[in-house]
Image 1: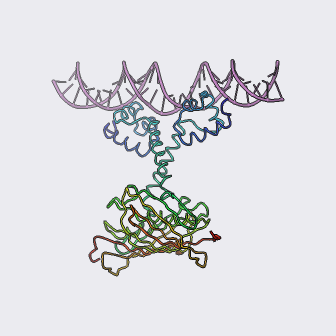
Image 2: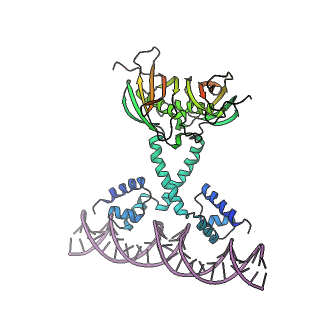
Image 3: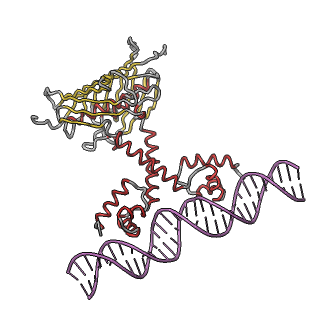
Length: 191
Length: 191
DNA sequence: TTCAGATTAGCACTTGGTATTAATACTAAG
DNA sequence: CTTAGTATTAATACCAAGTGCTAATCTGAA
């Protein structure tokens, strides 16, 4: 009895936590113990068999994948776009977007929503942000629904640039505003 | 032969893409066809059995979990911090961070790195960004390593505010600069 | 009709287990 | 020393979800 039973079971938990892909045979080798012993240990600890472990890891993955498709790249669902004129998007703030310490949304999420919208409203293969000035007017919290409105300034600038103003609100109250100077390659003809 | 073979195999791919948890029996029921036919289809399409599918989904999950722990919240690894003075972080740009259309990094990632760093350099429970002005000097591409340097301006402002300047470079060449006006609750004593 | 491709069936074998029962080893107490 | 008690190992039957293979059946078109 190299390692006492109790300790072995403890090690077993953390071992499978790190690597859920081990068969009982692998584990038996790892602890220099018989396969039957491993099975008993798993039974006592309520640890499911390999295939069940993989199933749960995989299903967790599927959930997260769906979730990240909604949030990761989109940063707010774009609701309406009138190209080269104005656009609107909404962004639901969740626990994932806030500082744990104080529950306030990290600034870069608000920026990401606004900036993405500014890019989207200019229907252009190469719309890049050049300069930008921002104002975070009021803290945003988990559960808030942020509505961003982008408006393209119609004044024509030299050197292929356009200014987009974005104002974000939560329940009609302004929380963020930004001015984005965008560079574009193909200037749209009249519209 | 309700659905022709070719089409059925096509449907099979997308079906398992959505839900990899189906057994051959499930699939057979879904297409009103025998289990053997399903096996043949999987063989021809090179689709592995249920347990192999789950294994690969699960292993992908493990990789991504490790990856996201490094990237998700951090947006650049913070290398060095001298509280209330200066800080440095690096951020490796991958394919996930760029526009597919032109391979240029989305602005909000550069902003996120800089803004996170500005928050981190002020050791404060409640450091919030109030205003900010940014300049995206040069496009950043996948594979670039962005180094951000934050410096806290030592001039004391009234009303609990502090200015942090951040300059980001790729191979010593400036790509981004930002000025962050931060609001803080607890003002640090002398340092 | 006949023939090819598609489909179905049957059987032996594999992995990684569960469930159960029995045998062995080692200690600790009476 | 015996005996109970725990831990470990072994042995056996069984299951799910397959693979691999061979053979039979169906079906549509030349």
